[in-house]
Image: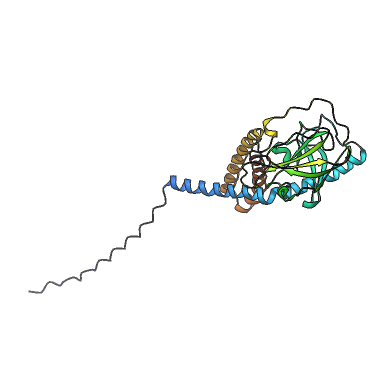
Length: 294
């Protein structure tokens, strides 16, 4: 009897190891919250950079253009000297030698006007005329032209050039409120915020007219709104802010669509100037909602 020939047993292939479990990604709500906070942080940092770096450059350029234009108006005798004066029109050149300051003064004191430089309060006479002339200026943003008013001393000279000529003033003091002038005298009051970062009140400098006063205006002074006094925001900026925010959402949506459908770099090249322009206008509108003398 022959032995049954045993067939070789075929070794079973070892089972392939299971792939390592993929780490669970963060929950969608957490990811969305993280991305949103990141974008918000970038937006806030961009706004701070606009106020600290870009707004002074905007102010300097605007002043350069206004100074050249106002010199031409003075030479031609067409500089405004009496109401009605258009808001934002150049009305004077303010010079403070101790501070090395020379600023073109605009008509009006809302946040929108003080972007361009110091503003003449519309319900007061122009500098050089009898009475109290009031000029508001920013302490920190848009060049902060009045940020160093605290360095002025009694006796310092201030000059103002208007369409009626040159008016000279001598600093007489400062304080938290405007005092009525002495009978027959004329006073210049410079007003700003008491801080260029987080103001809690106003800082004032008063100066007495030492040159001969020029003819004033006998008409009833115009009434001003709440947004034209110191430390006031401009509620008129809310509508532009809303419209520019909608434009930003639209631009961001189109950029995302373009990024998914076409090449990355062409999308960046085309969309970046548009997004920056929209952001610039959003930042301008936001700045108008800050105190006007900040």
